[in-house]
Image (tube, rainbow, N blue to C red; front, side, top):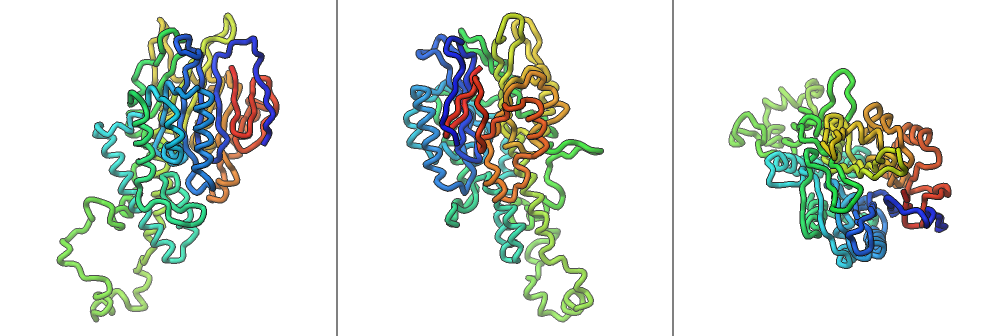
Amino acid sequence: MSKAKTTAPSNVKPRAKVRMYRHGLGDCLLVRLPHAASEDGWFNVMIDCGLLLGTPDAAAKMTRVVKDVAKETGGRLDLLAVTHEHWDHVSGFTQAKDAFKALKVGAVWAAWTEDETDTTVQALKDGRRKALAALQSSSTRLRAMGADGAAGEVDGLLSFFGIGADPDGAPFAASAGSTPEALRTALKLGETLRYCRPSDPPFQPEGADWRIYVLGPPRDAVLLKKSDPSKRTPETYPLAAAAEGLVTALGAADDDGRPFNRAWAIPAARARELEFFQQTYYAEAEAWRSIDEDWLGTTTELALKLDSDTNNTSLVLAVELPPAAPGAGPEVLLFAADAQVGNWLSWQDLTWAVDGRTVTGPDLLKRTTLYKVGHHGSHNATLREKGLELMDGLRVALIPVDEVTAKKKNWKEMPRASIIERLNAMVPGAVLRSDEDAADQPWLTKDELYYEVTF
């Protein structure tokens, strides 16, 4: 990776600086916005701090990132935004816990989907907990059956929740507690905590000429669970009937789904010894009736749906900058976290009244000049017609990704080739992947640890 640096002309007052860290497959961004009221003239925003489970030397890498943030900001974060409960977005809050002691954090923002006083959130988190428990049990059973491929797919998705093994194969987490713990640690770092909703008015500190809008996650339950584009019928994210059955069968549901009391049950081992069952169910001619462990085939489906469900709870922020020149319009920096289709679609209906004008979700998309690409460039985290194709003013795309690591997890399209092709066509030479060397640009500072874009 290149250590050469180029910077914007020193006689131009930056409207913003966006630093994307290149530490691996995970998100960590530092956004600096002019603010005369601050001692150093900057309002410092950190968005996420994480790295995929199983990354070698993860704690050392995250510590290096956090130390750089502290150095660049003088040890002050005005705002810490924690987008959602996935390990590759929050691991650093525990891995680099000591390094965070050098940072004074003002406000912490999280999505409304982390507010556990909300009954909807309670139901979401309870469902997530049960599904994770079922998936862990299912992964163990799949390996016992010799289905290592299917188990590997499940384990890869469980790693987003901080569940799995370290690079040496040792167990990392015995339960689903690691990622929630990292999230809780992050939420306690600030002087204040805010749960953000799209209905909130835009945030604009006194004296600032920029503002921050909250675009997602949506409050609409259908959109919140919608992970893939519709075809003939909406593809929402309630657990499929088969997936619900998996949760129950593996003992994670509150209701075990039995039609009769357990007292009337005959254990399978005992049933095999009884003549009636030997002749009726276990005879060779009746083998076709046995489903054995086929029901575990729904495990991968459940894992994918759970992953998408969590991604769709992402806190999405749009930073509106002042015009670059007289007569030009305001520009937008879009930080989409891992938002998927339902989250994106919900922005179409958002409106805010700002300084006598109406600002809409589509309007913010049209004026997007920098886009932090969703979910490492995966297939359903960048909308087409109602997303990327609306970004007429796009100049830069940031993609925190490590394709080699993704392929080791059997994620063959992270990033998706068609998304990369379209971005390259829209902004040639300005698609910045954290795993690749970027071309020299007058607005780009390049370092082994980060790329920084100056506006």
